[in-house]
Length: 141
Image 1 (cartoon, rainbow, N blue to C red):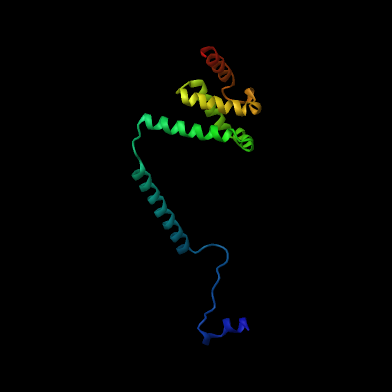
Image 2: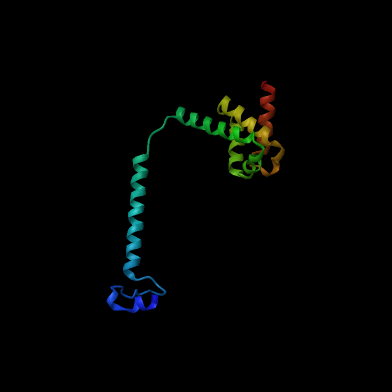
């Protein structure tokens, strides 16, 4: 029944040609033009969204991010996932080593304290610096 409807020219349904293999040149050009338009829109959005931000705002953003990671580190289910983010751990350790801000350093110490049982110092980028900075922080207190 369905085959007879498709083949019957009186019903207004024309048989659909199906292309096999390569795309036609017009189809490739359409897709390329669509991609070019998308790239142009992205470039415009990037230049429009650019804002100058003060160093104080950046430090406040950093404090917020470190606080969120600190809060996540208290949950036992998150420990494995945080430890697997090697770049994140390197950043946390470098923030302790740099002693950029007291609040950031304290939150990073909380993170290191919570995840310390999983940290292998020889595998971290700043293992010896971390130990030295922790000893210097202990001697300050």
